Length: 93
Image 1 (cartoon, rainbow, N blue to C red):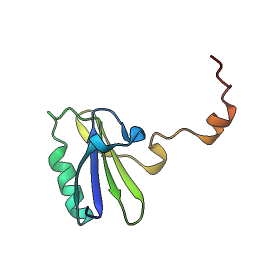
Image 2: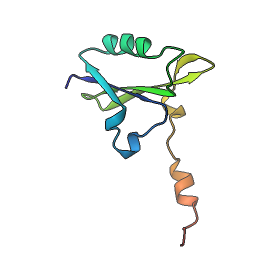
Image 3: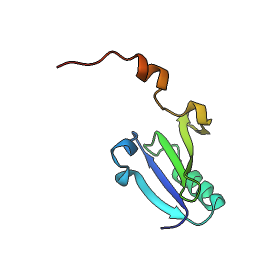
Image 4: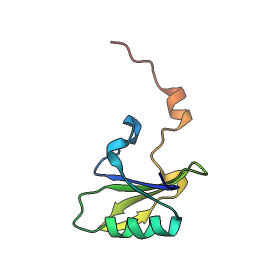
């Protein structure tokens, strides 16, 4: 597998392993960005695209907004806040 892995989908299943969301891998970030632009066509049934750099373990996340692909800032990524997790009430069955 090459350095930059590209994932995309209509919903994010990366938390379940993400294997079905994997599309391809490329050698450079420039190639990855070009592929993202090709994948992100308005008629595509996608909600999100991610470029993952295996060398640095960093990801660039993109979302569709009003028909356009927008890169999310790292703090915009959907991650639960530690404060919210600590404040959550225990769940009982």
